Length: 348
Image 1 (cartoon, rainbow, N blue to C red):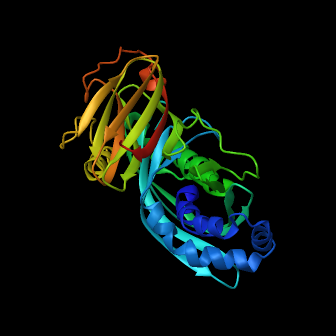
Image 2: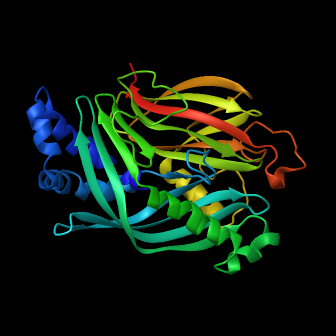
Image 3: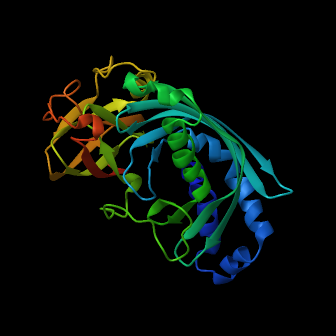
């Protein structure tokens, strides 16, 4: 989650620093050598925007570092405390999400926590590296199960020692927080990575960017189980004349892809997290298309300003595709793996 929060610093303070340092190694050296100056720049240009940026985005959840996403967390409330004396920022945030587990199926949950970060950055010749290093976990995480798709295993959510609470409350959420995050800001935009990267390392991605003029909104791989849906986003289109440029690589049978307004997608997602059976959304998608099985495909969509979600449907209950039946679906059979990049650029 913290990589989402520090995005604002990369887009504001990073730009300021880039302007200061353009063609001037002496300025870069002075900033890099002064912790107090770096903190002043961060606290004045970045800290106040951390929560607004966090609330705009979801975070993929993984069982192993750099693995495929198996669920999502969506912040719904956030506030920050800036401590000038210790030069730290504490983020208090909460939200809801979902994940998939063998036997249990889709699991909905809520999380609340507070984490203290010690932000820092370094200017290189062509990039600004922003690090959000976890200083300590101040509170929580407090994890609660909202629903378990398979009631046979609902007992697992009744005890703090149960499989679901320990796995998603500690192994996933805690590991995401403890690892820290890196944002690399350059003329090509902002790039993200779990963990701390040092220059000149760059975050790994399933795809290379198609254009230096595009801003990367998402670039990762996700697993979508049989009779499940996955919500990618939110994806913000800021201005008129912009489009989403998408590239997909699917391993597995064909799936449906739906583009929805964020508000409609959030309502649908929250219902599923509370235990509603999978069914078509009450608000029709803006558009939809089919990704052919075991293939690569590109798609571009010109959209008015707003926030959107991409929904990947690997079921026979929502879109036009009916995936093949698999007797091992409860254990993970019938999974598709989707690698994708989603970029924002000029529609022309």
